[in-house]
Amino acid sequence: MRPTNIQLPGLGVEQDALFEFDFHADPGLLSAAPLVPASAERWSASGARRSVRAGSFVGQCTDDYLFLHTSKAANATTLRSTSRDLYAELLEQAQKLGYHQLVRIWNYVPDINAGEGDAENYRQFCWGRAEGFDGADWLLPAATGTGSADGNLYVSALVARSGIEVRHHENPRQISAFQYPRVYGPRAPSFARATYMRSGSQELYLLSGTASIVNHETRHADCLAKQLEETARNVASLAALYPHLKPIAVRCYLRHAEDQEACLRAYSTTFPGFPKPALLHSALCRSDLLVELEAVFAAPN
Ligand code: 3EB
Image 1 (cartoon, protein in one colour):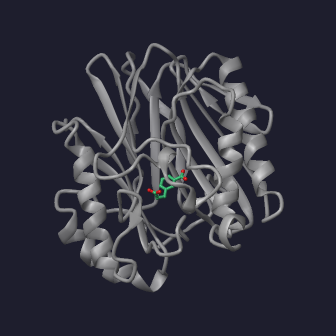
Image 2 (cartoon, helix red, strand yellow; image 1 turned 90 degrees about the vertical axis):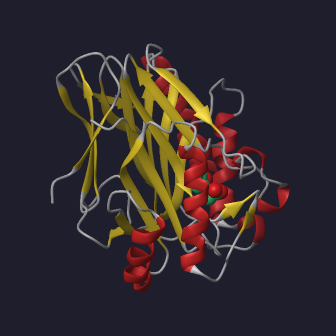
């Protein structure tokens, strides 16, 4: 299968790959088993590219964009400090390289639901991530935070230079994640619901990992089909901000591999007009979530 092309806004015409999520690569940018052969996303940008090494991170950059990624072994006792250190380092390195606008972050957290209460791995990750942002002056971007299957914490980040217009959005159907109440952990998740970007007439709209959460509560804890429908309402509410943009790439994170067929069947009716999703087997940040979806919107050509 050919990769899905995602073109980052920019002024040049020649587009080259800046980074690629190859869902079959091992090791790649995440550890989640692909369930259908929708195999890769190729994110491209115009202009010359260079490789970058920046502390624990490696990646590529153009004049407009910086993509950095890393993975590091982490467990219940180290996740908070590892997350804090990686985030502090990411922000410092991006700043130093001259890219000041976070656009999109992907986080894959090992044993994400292990541990009780505030000791849960996801909450420890959120705690450390929030500490990594403390004292720094960044706007929170769209993100994904789901499970990693191999004991490593994966963090990938796309950052833009100031010439790219970047706007972050919240979802009126949901409390902002960064304002979630204390019951979900010591520090709230650091992300925006969606990020829009533009350069000239080129636009891209990136939806965060989106699930069956209304206000701050999980809905339909026991039902995949209903969770997908609630997720579709959340996606529609964000999509309504840019009605001229259409979905071009979707990832669907599914907790139970055996739900694969039911999920694809429900998706085709719940998300009419959306492309086939890259279906990934992955645990999710709340143990009552069965499915989570992220999407990229662009102008139809
Ligand atoms: C939610 O809406 C579902 O911690 O970076 C979605 C997107 C979720 C990103 C993150 C978590 C994150 O709260 C979980």
